Length: 159
Ligand SMILES: CC(C)(COP(=O)(O)OP(=O)(O)OC[C@H]1O[C@@H](n2cnc3c(N)ncnc32)[C@H](O)[C@@H]1OP(=O)(O)O)[C@@H](O)C(=O)NCCC(=O)NCCS
Image 1 (cartoon, protein in one colour):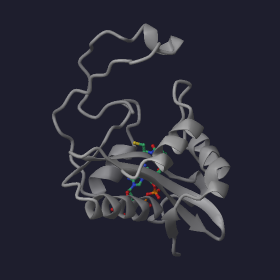
Image 2 (cartoon, protein in one colour):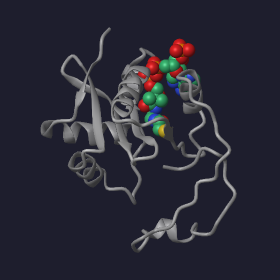
Image 3 (tube, helix red, strand yellow):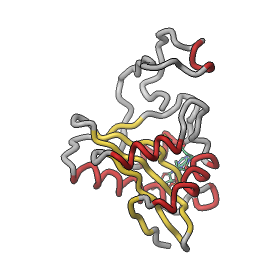
Image 4 (tube, protein in one colour):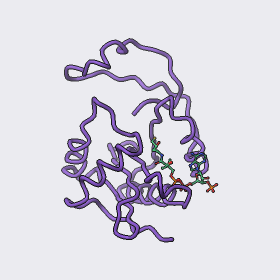
């Protein structure tokens, strides 16, 4: 079964947001529509979609910050998993980043998302000993306020 992969188009937006909800990738403090708008505005970022039988069944957001390439919103519809689509769209994002000169690709995994680690291991990713730190540059949403202290966390961290 083949997956058609292409850049996002206007008519894809609601289907992508719905896919991200279904895949548990949305959080109250991230507005997925805004994330999509920003990724599309900048030449250094893109959202790729995977299509099967006219349906959007996979996605990835990729961006090159000039130093590293990053992946976000790697998602495959729950009904289409285990067919290699996740691997295919990840490779497409890696190629997009490589074509723009990114020497390395990185991603963050929320610390409660255990199963996805095997997916990335099988695609050649390794855990690197890093701690992700963050600081809000605007008023943080309520759920984030109480967790704003520095804590030691696993190397692969929250998106
Ligand atoms: C992670 C995800 C994208 C994988 O998609 P998928 O299409 O099922 O993955 P593939 O079929 O391409 O699998 C590729 C390989 O990863 C392995 N794999 C995939 N999901 C796995 C899992 N949950 N546990 C263990 N291995 C897994 C497959 O066995 C396969 O290994 P192989 O090449 O050795 O046979 C999908 O499960 C998903 O959307 N998860 C929810 C969203 C998410 O957590 N995204 C990542 C955020 S960081």
